[in-house]
Image 1 (cartoon, rainbow, N blue to C red):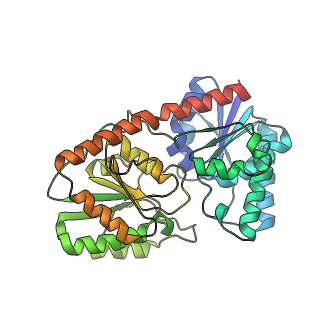
Image 2: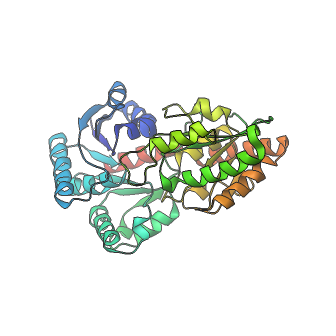
Image 3: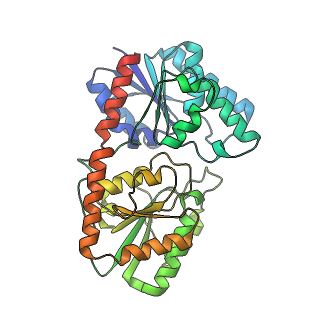
Length: 370
């Protein structure tokens, strides 16, 4: 029985984003193993029928000795497992996991889900990151990309342009689970932002726009936040700040959940004012699938999910004023116009973002390489 390893920086990520991929691999007769740090979702992964192998590393660490040790951790795990193929997700797994596989002669598939701002910035850190990607990816078996910018940037590095690659629509969305729930029309307009509480996700711009609109519309508009406070990130917004906004009545903080559907069903419009180096944001393709109009930035990854004026609106990155303008534009829509946007969002999800497209792409490449 051939062994396929899935590796990412959290068990939570693999369970929430790759659950159906795992089930499809098992159904095809593969032995599936997961290599990721242990967290609250590890047991859930094991319940799917995978074998779990823990690895410990700090997502934010830049200590050279610590990072080299992570490569050796991957090396010893894969030397013991001897998998037929390794499917990597998230940056450090893509880089360090691929280096370990390279040393052992194990075929590896990388998933580039957003190169971030560091890749296009100037300075020593950017040069180091580019070099790490170059030496780790120049002998990959296959690379999946989520947007054309990332494909162009990475393929510009020597040797990587020869690696077979393909564009996929993010992690895709389960269209059966995320069924059509069109935007309703009522006296109260509900905006929802689903994201980790990070500055670069546009949380502060959302807050600023919410303050202004709440002053004008009062209880006729609500602004909701759903997602974890990411204490490991240097750009994390503190729980205390989020709760201060919540208690002031400007924003309703809903906490964190694995099941976004109940809150998504109540929303009229999903907002993501991100200026982060996105792949294709999961929250946006889920919103499109259920038929919620979207307001997001004209930013890499985000604009791939929204046709401006068709299933939502695009605003300028880092601009609360532009975001507020598009929110006002949405609030001015008639019931028929909102419903039309809902239908077109669902149609876009069915055409481009069906999870089955992603899973088939993985299965095809795994079969060819293993």
